[in-house]
Image 1 (cartoon, helix red, strand yellow):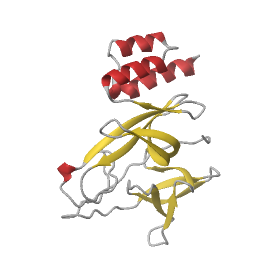
Image 2: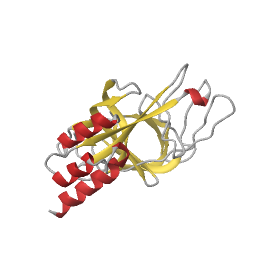
Image 3: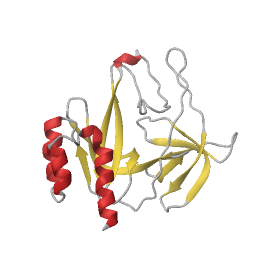
Length: 213
């Protein structure tokens, strides 16, 4: 994976009465494939096309930038970057291979933790952002029929990706194997002090160890 300067965006929303949501543009920046920074106004809709809308100033021409044109972007304090060639999981535990998507930076460091978001539902829908932040979606069916699915993915220093299984048994066995070089972390996993939802804390603890050596 290319060396990346990572950041993270936050999105916006307005849900219009039945079906349409309109997003605003927020101040931010993106980094092109050469690592050059471009400041301006950004809109990110969390759709399956994996692209952002960018314009230098209000009322200027809008450019569409896809995952093959940029390596990452920032809105306010939040960052996304392009993760290439990885697997994520659906609500039934089936794995899906992806060539390149934007993912959210959760814990940066020697070992990086990201989240990939997916939605599943009936009818006609598009990608939806995390439920705890402003987001944009277009939906054509009741909201309760839409299910958000989050996948933690570990990215090591070589760029190798590892899907973190949500299933408790699979989580424990796979993470014990993954962190076998760190007995204290393995012990916490086995005692269930670290579960799937505790991955940010687990990765943070490991990164502190690695950076202090």
